[in-house]
Length: 443
Image (cartoon, rainbow, N blue to C red; front, side, top):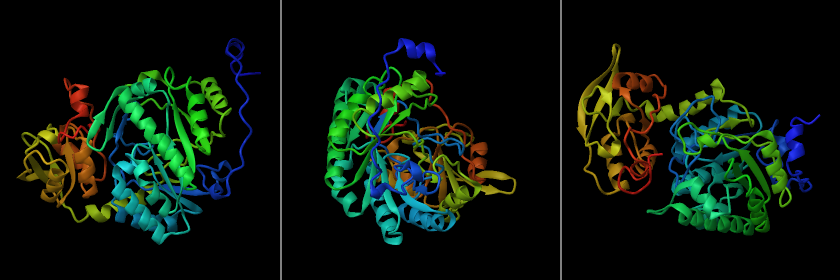
C-alpha cells in the first residue's frame, strides 16, 4: 500500500524517470558518483578553503558539531602543507581510500591559491587517488585549465535554479572579486558563471555532477528546468538534496520537503538527465565511507594535523574591552588581550595593539604577524576576509560571547567555544559588509 494514498490520488502523476545511465569507467570506485562503491571505497575532504564568495540563505558555516554532517561544517582549517601531511596519515589509516576532495568549508575557488596548491601536493604524493572538487561555480571558469592540468576528474557544482528571480531569494549576495552583487543581478551573474563552468569542464573531459537543494516554495517547481539546462551542456548526473534547515538562517522556516516532494522532484528532473540518490550531505572535513560519522581515530588524525601548528603557539588572543568578556567585533578591535594557560586556569599576560584599520587583506596579514605566537583568536564577530586570511596564516578564529575565561578554557583543552548569534540591533546589511570594508560578510 502506498505510504501517502490520499496525496497520491489528488496530485498529478509522478513521471517515470529516464533510464539509468551506465557509470562511466572513470567514476567506478568513486563513492560519490558510483552507488555500487559507497559501501566499499572511502573518500577524504581536505578543509583548506575557509572563504566563500556566495552567501546562501540556507547556510551558516560558523557552527561545528562532530555529529553534524552538512556542507560548510569543519572542525578546523588546514594549510595546503598541513592538508598534504594529513592526507599521508589518512592513506595509511583508512582502508580502500580512493578519492581526495576539497569541498570547503567555504568555496574552493574563493580560495583558489590554497586549493590549487593542495591539489598539486596531493597529485605529487598520491597520484593513485582520484581528485575531486565541490563548488558553487562562480570563480571556476578562470581556473578551468589549471583544474584539468592537475588531473581533477570529478567536479560537483551546486546549481539551485536557472531563474534569477528565484536565485534572488536563495542568495543574499554574490561577490565577484571585490564587488558585491545582490538580488537578481547577483543571481544572474552566478548562473552565467555556472553555465560557463559546466561547459568548460565537459570540454576538458571532466565528469560533472550537479547538486540542487530542494527548498519548499522555491526550487521544487524549477528542478526540471535545471536538469534540462545542465543536461544540454553535457552534465553527467544530478543529485537533488532536500533542504537541511539550519537554525538562524533566512530559509530555515521553509522546512525540509517531504518524501513525496523529493521523489517527485527527482522524477521530473530524471526526464532530462541521470539522477543519483545515494550521495549524502558531507562535512568539509569528512573522511571514510559515505554516511560514516567521524570516528575517534579520524578526529585524532585531523587534530594531530592542526596540533603540529598549535603546539608551537602557547598563547590565545581575545577581542575584549576589559579582559573579562569576549565582546568586541574584530573589525572594531584596536587591541587584543593575550592569555596563557596556568595550572589554576588561563590568565591575561599582556594587551597588544593591532594595526590600524584599512588596507584590506594586508591589514589582516599584519594582524597574523602580531599574533604569530597565538593558537586562536576569540571575537564577538568576524568577517569572511579577516577569517580567511588569519586561518590561512595558522590562526583559528572563533566567534563566541560571554566569559573570556570560559571560552579560553575551551580552546586550551581542545574544545570549540560556544557559537554566538549576531549582535542585537546589528542590521543584516551591516553584518554582510562588516570587517575591513570589502563587503565579504560575517555569515
